[in-house]
Length: 478
Image 1 (cartoon, rainbow, N blue to C red):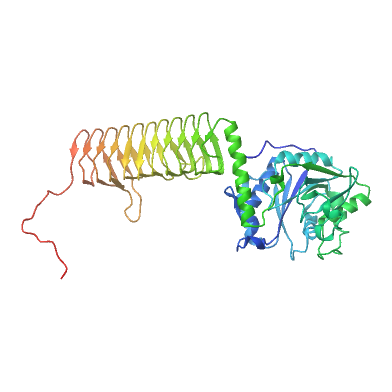
Image 2 (image 1 turned 135 degrees about the vertical axis):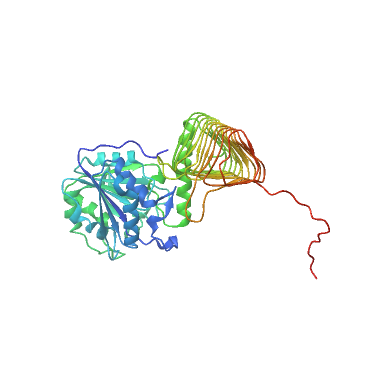
């Protein structure tokens, strides 16, 4: 389930600038802060995704700490799917937000509106940003603000009536200004032509010796450019990540928002607080999901599907009325590829089952406890209920694959396929050494090792005759 609304089209071109140069010392990690993950995607990727929703013309990412790693990760995750031009500029050294924005001047066009975002603020909603851009009307400086009961650390919005006069940073604020509870979120929309002029006028005469982007507000006021504030009440939308604790808090906020959306659509969640989506989850009517389930990639659940507790499901389509019993692990390959997992209607999977890439199950298939299926198709009504492995196999309708049996599909260099035709019964503890075909309606006796094709409607047994030795003594320790 996507967490973004439909794209918003703007008359004035929108160029998105994302600040992603910081080190993130409080994360106490060797990885750049913006590459830490929330809901299965990097923080900065969540921000980049907003650009497509806003029909942005280009995205400019300002990198610094770990620049090579950040740029490579963004380029890989955005790839050809991007609907905008993607550019990187580097800020070295990192001496303030204004200095960071100065690096973007060569790549910004004069005819656009620049939307400034932070790479560690992942949960801003597209509608909020669309409203901010609209408030700027293409020629005004628009600030996204919020009222906080504890505004410590944020730049204060200084007003005269409804007119915004300035943003004062915490360290530069007077005692009276520190009492102001309306704060700047770090997000603004500003006409590009004026932005370039204002950036050239910045200085670092302040308590931190840095170049503040927020100083452009006083320049706008001095130049007679209206400054407007678009105020929201949802603090999660402007919350940044500076520590593992804050990252965990935003993860739960994100998951709670998705859980609420799903429940509003009629999905039953045993406990919304113990539910994780790290991709997209699509649910039909009357789906039930028990606790501690994780959904990754693209997962589609049909009508009446029941997911038991502690399941992990990735890149899979599960048809109507299927029951996935607890502790099942489904790991499909890329969505819409031959490696995505498919489970037919009315099937029973698990508990403790594992479906790997390329598993394609028909209707009313049973895959029981400690059964693994990889790159195999099982036709309607096929069953493998206990302790079995089916790899690179084509299994016909109503086949019963016995406990402890496996397809031996790998010869040390190549994979080979096993074909089990309809209505075959494979006894317990059998080894089917591929390539091999079991004829329709046949039976393989328990404990057999099959190396040759078997005829249809016959019993095939491949094991040595049982021998009992009298007067045999088990070795003993001396």
